[in-house]
Image (cartoon, rainbow, N blue to C red; front, side):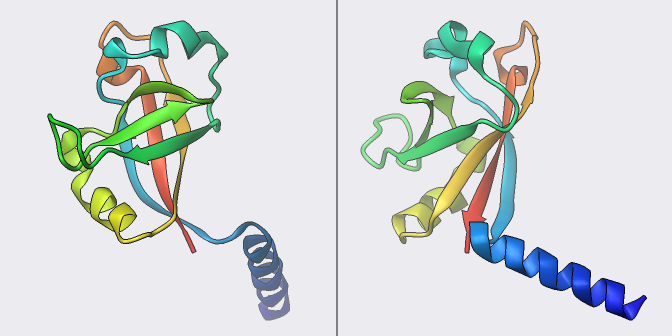
Length: 121
């Protein structure tokens, strides 16, 4: 049993080092999607798709704003209630990636896309 556990751990470490270790920082609904391109691109999106996080420190509505893009199209923002720590870490140069974790057809725009923010080590 111990040998199997050791082999599994070595395999995981090898796989993790090839891709980098990613730590889940938060899972959030997408904010503001009704004002951006989500309606135009939603049918093309898949769970697991990579999202790009873009800091907007000069945003007039929220100095911690983090824009969320899918394939170069803005689809919304990290919710204001979830963005403070990630914004500070991004400003400090920490590398983050994001991905779609859930897609749902829902009349409430806050329920349509859920995404995960991951810190890359």
